Amino acid sequence: MFGLSLLVSGLAWWLGLYLLARDPRKPLLWWAGVGMIGYSAAVVMPHPVVIGVPALAWTGAILLLCRPELIRWWLFALLPFCAASFFVPWIVLLPLAAATALAIRKRAYFSLVGVMFGLSAGAFLLGLLPDAITLPSLGFDVVVFGVLVAVTDAVEEGEAIRADMLRSLVISGFTAVLFGSQVIFFGGPVLLVYTTVAAAIAVQVLANPLALMVDRLAVPAVAAERAELRDAAEALPRRRPLVTEDEAEFARLTRKALSHYGDLGKLVASPLIALTDEGPPLDRAAQLKSLLLASIQRLKPLDGDFGTSDEWRYYNAVYFYYVKGIRPYSVRTKREDLDAEDRRALQWFVTQVPERTLHNWQNAAARLVAADLMAGVGSA
Figure 1 (tube, rainbow, N blue to C red):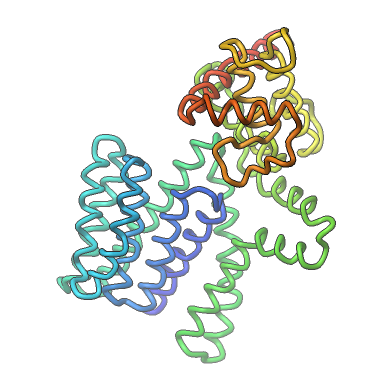
Figure 2: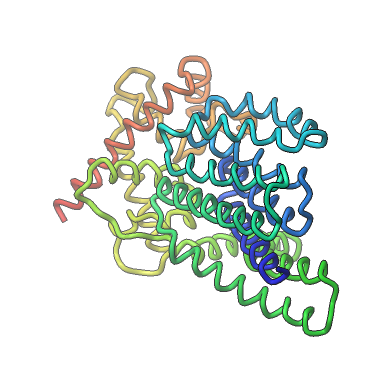
């Protein structure tokens, strides 16, 4: 039983950290990752309240996937459900069941896993089956859910997932066995085995963020450059082949590449890297960035340097947002660092362009940029 619990806990811990490390800025990965980590803790401390953590977290993840407009309401309801779980543990299954029902039509596979997890968690919380049965059952549901979230995110990013995930699992597993086995061999306490395995996995999965923290303290002058090189190395296993026959997919990949315009490490993983000449990964990412900029510049009207008429909207939507890095709806935009043209563009966005409208213009502009890139492929 101890060996199975250690395996299930370690696997859930690794998968939770893997999801968080993929992109800490994505709420979906945060919700799913917290659910994984919460379940890992529940294996070590099988308390009904701890078991409720993955149920509450995955409710948020399912809502983000299927009904994102409801997530703000779930944020308000989260604290009351957490408090109520101390008195009525099974109450956490109610929002999970509701979210699962909402997901049936849009994401049937997530609904199935939600039902499986709900049944296993209910059996545990109500004491219907022994822990030796319910905990491994929960562990299977956890792994399936985590893998589905990772695959969904990879598809949206236009990335491959299998090689990257397998590499992370193998390295983390080897390190966990190496250090955990020593504690077991020398007769260490059970809790020390769990914490040693968790620390070994965390050091491997979070190697890049930890290295960045150390670089900022020890070598701040080159911390950003070292981070870029690490990101590029991490991105290589995530790159998948480019298929140019599917225009809609090509446009989607172009839209994603535009969103990563200022991040060479992310561009390394883009399938559009196939449009560049052979060379070192960062050089090819820089070439892709130049190709994107050239296509964006071809959207610019010929009458002047800046305009707000309809013919300017697509160019403005991608050039100022992605190339110049202006975020008109963010409070972190530093207005004092902008030149006169950028300030005019910022003022126009804030006063005349709703955020949803800008998003639609960016999608349309991405299709135009994609068409331009594909024309270049056809003439090559």
